[in-house]
Image 1 (cartoon, rainbow, N blue to C red):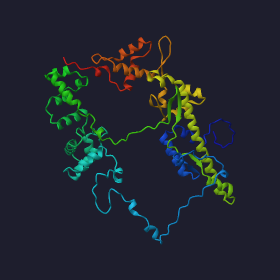
Image 2: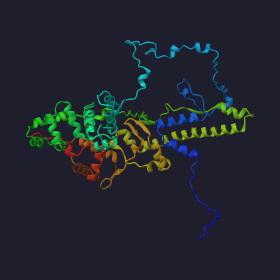
Image 3: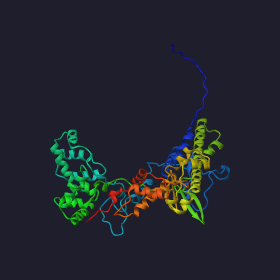
Length: 487
């Protein structure tokens, strides 16, 4: 078959996403903090955009963003004043003491008085130490040689966030080019550092290292961890006492010591910062009626610069390339403002629909949460499901029941036997938590017993479903919740 070039016509339908449409979709799925960063980045890149953020804190109403240029006087563009280096009087007039640190004089050391409570500017520059940096600092204070300290760096680099050694010692010796005995020696030095139990291979070794630090190396808690750890997990204290030929009272006292240990010593030096949530929407109840308020605090109030609009209208001698550049930036700025306004309206409409479907939840709590899917809200406000999915991602609402992500209100349904209103999966999880909290610790409820309780209320729930919901709540199984027998 010969190869040849030919021309042909083809008619097809396809969705073409313009850059403006892509930007609108991107803004729709951004969280609040990400939206603020995106707007600030656009302000820096687009000279036509102005942020009227100062007007939010000013007294009285803010000026209209779309006022006509002839209705108000256009402010003159600010220009940076030139500095003449030959004229030293300008520099000499600056009071450099205003820029010095009041609490740490440069010339001499001054001890802080009782009234000097402000920290130094350098105090906020230091990063929070993590586990590796804390151990590395201790490693520098040891009497190890430079080669042994380098080997210690290899060991520290293989520690997990929990403080456990994840690499094999033989592998560390091979990669570092040291003898296995040297690796064992440096590891023992690191295991004597703070926190106690660090650089252990597993939880059992970590607990033994902590007991050794407490001078309990040969006592009953150490014996339990070495020989009867599997019985300790199930709280079978009678079997432990029988195996070790000790009284149950001694075993209980030893277990109290073990419970006070830290199975994850590295978590105390975690450098993860807390994540604070700023709600995008606030739902308040005013006079028996819920009011939806969009949170615009901190969002710049964007407007198109009147200076560049005057260039296009009044300065006819502006070069064509300059006019085309300004027009392009003005179109981009107008589309950004429109996209942000559309985003806020969409969030409001979605929250309004959620309020209609989940009104009983906002009145009475989680137990009255109804089944809801994205399709229900999409059909209610005549939007696509993908749009609802983007709106509800990383968006939070503050309600009288607490602060929730918008996706929290969407739950699968659990059918009732013989018909009736279906229940949401979240309300089922809430009821499982309540049943376990009220159970008898001597005879905790098993997953099958929980399923039978729901069956009495005509709720069809399998045992495996109960186990899945219980694990999602972080609740242990019944054998681990059972109160230990002491007789």
